[in-house]
Image 1: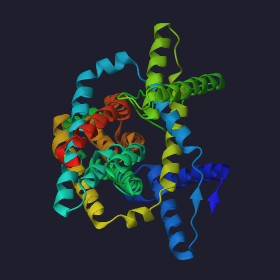
Image 2: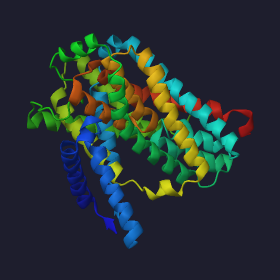
Image 3: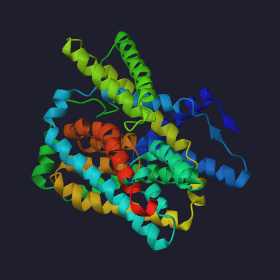
Image 4: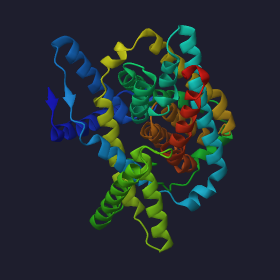
Length: 400
């Protein structure tokens, strides 16, 4: 049974409303800051799985809107990225990027170690490492084709999708509970400082905040997003099959950054309230749609060695975030929010990281520095680092 594009959009909206209600009604979801799209989307994915197993009916939601929503979200990140602001957060950005890069390197080291220990193809260790954990579905799908065509790994695409699905689910569920545990390690003085922070809201920081904007500003924002999508697609096609090849969403974000800063130079201001409104809508719809379209039965189909590698990656992420990221980033409230973000970046994707941060800051208070550096780190710098790291690992002697 295939659900059409319009019905899928209706279902996605209902899933978001369901997620909001579930977080309001179920104390444990609120306590552990589970994002509403994750709560609602997983319920639908489970219902679809039960329907498949009991009634032998496979429900498929249309995917037409999913990619445009994701690209629209990344374009709004670019349209909000002021180089002057990134320069102000430079030292923190460099430190956090180093931690993110360190984790994705360790993911491949652990994946290879477990693959050798379990006696399976070492390519599975890389595929269950940073390719899908830090890379998500997009990077997993791209590299799985390389693994099949150049290295002869059969079913690489199916395995990559299964691994990325596992990461997306765990990344969205893990961030809130881990942040709650880390909050207990914050000093009383730091908690008081959090309570005294100003009420100024940055883009994406409070998805439920009312944004003062106008129809003209929304139309202008949609036009800018369209320019980012068209320009990003052309740029991605231009650098395709070259050493500089990047995913389309990174190119879209890059065009957004250029457009925003060029307009600033000529003193044309973008309405950030409109950007926030459209960006948060695109993010919520994309996440809910992605989660409700998850084929959970693909996780059950993964072989025991792959499941073992993924469990190992989950444990690695928890330990790394708790005992390395948290102290290195200063054992502060901002460090807690960054740790929740890294759960999303290291196990899911940038949208998951943003949703994790929104769920926490909506409950405990603002973290401006986190919302300043995480979107650019996860959507731009991390993908470049990951591509380089994957190529370096594939250059190891036992892959030839």
